[in-house]
Amino acid sequence: MTRFAQTLGLPLVLFLLLAAAPLWADTFTLSLLARAMIFALAAISLDLILGGAGLVSFGHAALMGIGAYGVGILMAEGVSEALIAFPVAMAAAGLFALATGALSLKTRGVYFIMITLAFGQMAFFVAQSLSAYGGDDGLSLAARSLVAGERWLRGPLAFHYTVLGLLAAGALLCGALLAAPFGRVLRAAKDNERRVRALGLDPYPYRLVAYGIAGALAGLSGALFANLTEFVSPAFLSWHRSGELIVMVVAGGMAAAALKAGGLGRPGSALLGALLVVLLEEALSDLTEHWRIVFGPLLVLLVLAGGKRARGGRT
Image 1 (tube, helix red, strand yellow):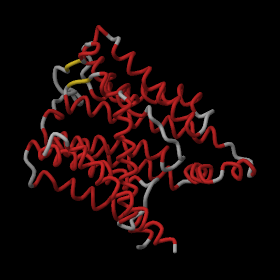
Image 2: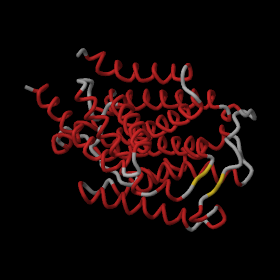
Image 3: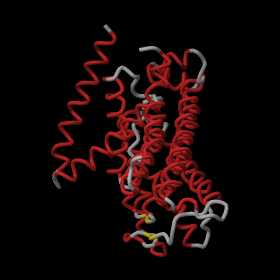
């Protein structure tokens, strides 16, 4: 497959399909696709640091939850304007990512995983303690956010295309970062950090900036998710949600490898993984309440197929 098809073909096809979805989808399907696209934005932000820099974070859901609570708390205080709430949500999540990343990125491997998990759980328990904003029961939003004083986001069609547009912007940003010298430094440090340091480059600031950008995009996905559900709760910040995002990134990378369309570190693969996981979860949950028993083996088969194709492509 050509370089153009690998980098642009898969995401372009997925975005065209999502753009055409309102032509045939009912309200429930549009809501399901909006949920998948929101998680795709979170997965793309995670893939920036996981696929691009090799950083396995179990605290990424906390960043998404901070964005959701940013919208919920502002709305509870009478600020319903998305042009205010969304940037605040992104800034809060981005600053939290920078503050925690400054310490977490001093570690490697399992230590990095555990410290991001610890920071994520810290944010989770802080959310539980916010008794003024629902505490453990969560916080209901009065309605979706306004845009320039208008109720555009309250219609399923307008919300669908708003999420799609922001998802496209996030994918383009992450793709551009990974293709730029900035991203090449990240990938080189992931493959051989000692060699990068020998060239006179310190990977730490590159990783920290990437971590902060990923946090801001995760905060944006949380703001959108709060608007979709019109509800926020501490469950948004749980490590289980972080695990789901990692599964989306890995599954997308393996699926893309099986299709010979790239893999980890490509926004299109993270988008594919989120769509696969969310839609497959919905389909299996309609069949049985024990859908995870079926989903697990399917994920293993997908990883095996992707790994086999990837090995075959290198021979």
